[in-house]
Amino acid sequence: MAKRFALVGLALLACTSSRVSAQSTPSNNINGTNSTFVTTAVPFLRISPDARAGAMGDASIAVAPDANAQYWNVSKIPFTTSQYGISATYTPWLKDLVPDIFLAYLAGYAKFGEEQEQAISASMRYFSLGNINYTDYIGNSIGTGMPREYSFDLGYSRKLSEFLSAGLTMRYIHSAIASGVNLTTTGSDYKPGNAFAADLGMFYTKSFEKTEGKINTFNFGAVISNLGSKISYNSTRKDFIPQNLGIGAAYTAQMDEYNKITFALDINKLLVPALSFSGSDTALSIIDGITKSFSTGDQLKQLTASLGAEYWYQNTIAFRAGYFYEDKTNGDRQYITCGLGVKYNVFQLNASYLVPQGNGITRNPLSNTLRFSLIFEFDKSDDRASTSGE
Figure 1: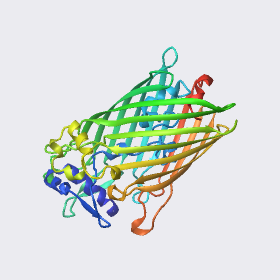
Figure 2: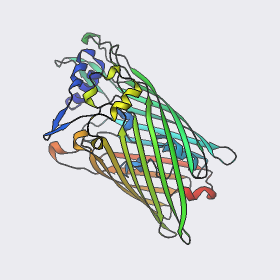
Figure 3: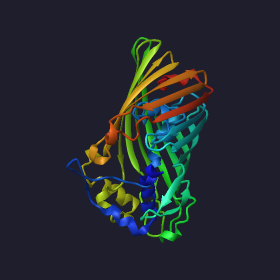
Figure 4: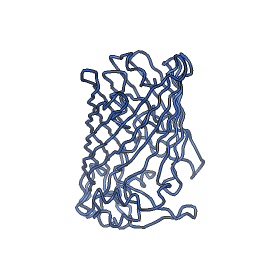
């Protein structure tokens, strides 16, 4: 259990008011670089629960939609090629550090309207941190618990035109990071945290015939996610949840009757004040926090980039690869991904793998991360296939 102490320490910092001043340090030095971190509560909301996107460097804001669009950009759903869809994903997390942390995800949608131009959707994320032996600040055991977090979403989306759609998702978030442990002996007034948030998204898609019989597609998407209330674990502090602005583009080229390839790029930025403001962020409103997020630190270094590619053969088997980049002064997550997809009739299976990188203390803790997704889509309609890219 010793290897979990870092996670335990973070949990206790979040729920013990006497130590919140530890987060007020304005900067950190990484490899001689003055850096300003952006930190939030409930970071599981930014863990990709989608094996298809996980194989493409987590790029999916504008790629062809499926049931997992509920997470990436709910406005894509009206452009799916099916009336109904269900997806289930299992993601072991931080596998190189601990064996029993995982994220489970279930999502589904249904389209309706005279031309199926509207859709309702729902999803649930469940993040388990396994069994943890909790200790106080001097190492005394205070019990064993099973920290867990989950969120439940309801979404609505519709086409605004032949090429454009918009969507809204409402979200409830619950975080019990010290579940099952009595913290009264530490003087903490810990309680599970709850929050409400929303996603706002738009999606544009345009198909055109480049050469006879070859239909290419350009997609663009933008989404503001987790826009909502702060979350609190005690009576004295409220923390921002991971509000995020993402934009993405994807281009699908049909090479011939049997082969096509998609290239995708996503850029993301957290709409949360950098660490230099964390000493006073409990007093900031949501709008002030978003404003401060654009005025602290090097803005370019606070961006993350996801680059992905997907190749389909006969709409039956897919090969995927991607790269995720985060600046070394803002977390230094940089990794290569790859994966496969297999489709048969209404059934699709996707798998992704995060390639191990580094050695020893430089080894990426996300190495060997696996994701598996099952997708079922029903009532496929050929007259909407041109926008799918699949």
